Length: 161
Image 1 (cartoon, rainbow, N blue to C red):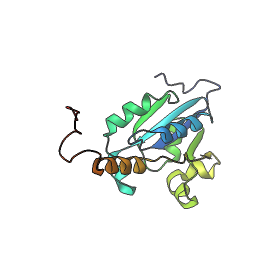
Image 2: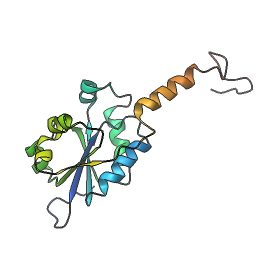
Image 3: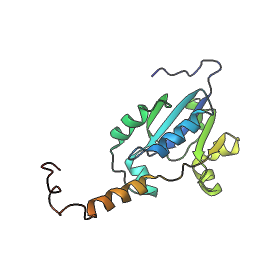
């Protein structure tokens, strides 16, 4: 993708995410973030960074990047984005606005997005309810332990699993 940095009239928006098991909630976040500018830059956090504050992703970093960069709202992806956004990072990527879901505490915002928050560049968007990666994992686990078919094989009449 072409980098529009330096073009006049282009507002670059940044959002970061793990993006594991990419789902409708992720799409909603990216769609809302894109509405804050002309060019959406998505920072994809590494496996180790994600594991430092939640769980290790199921999908690899390369898989997550491939899916996220294919989303129509995304113009640019930064692989292995930093956990903390610094003034240097904002300047190097010409970021005018940073977006995050509205589920972030003020302390979390200050820790992760300090310079953007201080400068009034941090904007919150509503978190899409009803779906999360954790909920998807729970659905998969529930489906694999249900009694819809005998353990160890496909249901009767279905030769393939």
